Length: 252
Image 1 (cartoon, rainbow, N blue to C red):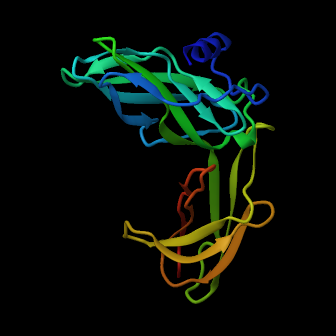
Image 2 (image 1 turned 180 degrees about the horizontal axis):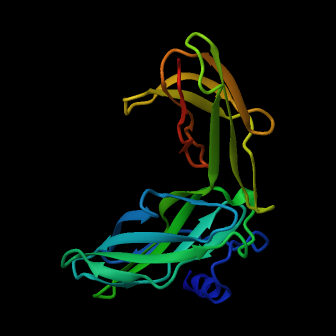
């Protein structure tokens, strides 16, 4: 396992879509060392767009009666032979027995040759050493969502509008295409149309519609009072949730 981590470190933080790495057969360890928590990017979800590099932070908390000495580079593995290796972790003691080891990896869609199939559930492989030569190795110490960044727009018209008249609300749901490095419509997805009355902080769902074959959204409502319209997408395993910025309509 350490051999594989060394090879990945030499080649850089690459998502390998053409090179299959044999999967390890089992977890391992010696003594009483345990991994108690794994957190990726704060909320176990990391989204990458089409042009801006993303630093993904990985934190692994481990425990041993003698204390934690250090950790090897963490390996992140996902669909379509996706593979990244982090920098060398820095371990900070939380107590005499427990430490949190933190590292990061830079993912750049312009140079890392991501495939759209790489999006989905990924796993963190971790090796942590204790001060008394105990250790723990887990192939799937934790999991996270590696996602294609999303975009969502909204436009409500006409503005202003007379009370009782029809308001048409359009928009588009799109997500990063890592293979073309452009955003493309996310088709056949359920999206909520929501409304927030002027002076209120709360959005209420009016209806749910689906994006069409190009990701476009369109529906109508009856004008009743001043307020903001927005579309809201709950997200999927491969694409993060997103809310469009509210579009204000003056009802006269």
